[in-house]
Length: 136
Image (tube, rainbow, N blue to C red; front, top):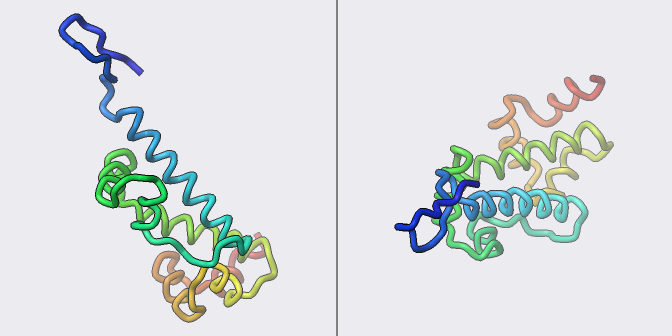
């Protein structure tokens, strides 16, 4: 990080376009998502947190979290949350013998809603995905 230490600058501050604090918040958001999903899968927690809950856990406002993630990663935080849910569900489908309904409930979804959610983002049902990719 480059710091402006010129005589006219009374406070040393980063010159880069994305501040170290924004990078820190972004990293904390992604680490939190990974841990939260791991806790859901392990049964440590039983409630899927919403973005408001996550921002509260990170001690920043909901709007601030959205602005920072959009600035640092170019997408809304929900985009990444959904992507991680899909990624975890795909891993469970390919690496376990759990039924799709069990995976859905583990991720706090009603099985029929999970099928619709998964198909919307992947383009095929969870069963079709598993059948197509299981042997690869």
